[in-house]
Length: 242
Image (cartoon, rainbow, N blue to C red; front, side, top):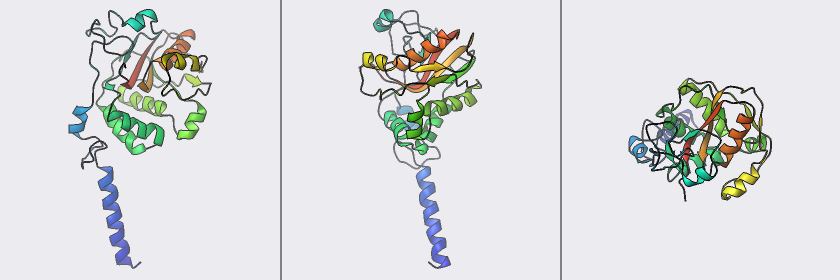
């Protein structure tokens, strides 16, 4: 290839690369951000009043961090965490974006998620630390990263709350996707270990998606057994009740 042709080929490659990196991850339109304003407003959001488990609950009190009453499931089995919040509903097209990032290691999708985080205020600024709900080391090895820890570190910088990696997943549980609530709970018995001192700390447990809340329950119980004063749960998205 002659020098002139090489220069032209380089220009074409750079133009294609930069055009692709500036396209909205949802609609494909060329934008300055990974998610365009039109698609951003279309994402389904979870508004109060909410139950402690993060699902919409009409009997709650939207003026309080912790709702005055619980949904029927939480009345039967109250969660060990005192509150949970997810700004977005886990539905199309957000589920596709998270899937690209989580299961295919698409770090371009992560840039779109970071944009969503930048617009999310801290719901509990008085908490002491953020704690990721970790993946097992085999899962991290398969994916090449731990999405919950990366999410936690990003939020720690945005919210000015320290990240405390206090949990370790000591059992490689089967994939939770597609399992019932009772099956998830059986999988998670003894799944977590506390590896850092947490006595007296108010902690925010961070994950990408809450489905049934079984992982959050198990991780919260582990932290509370080791002396945490309180655990609240924050996830980017919440699966709506079927």
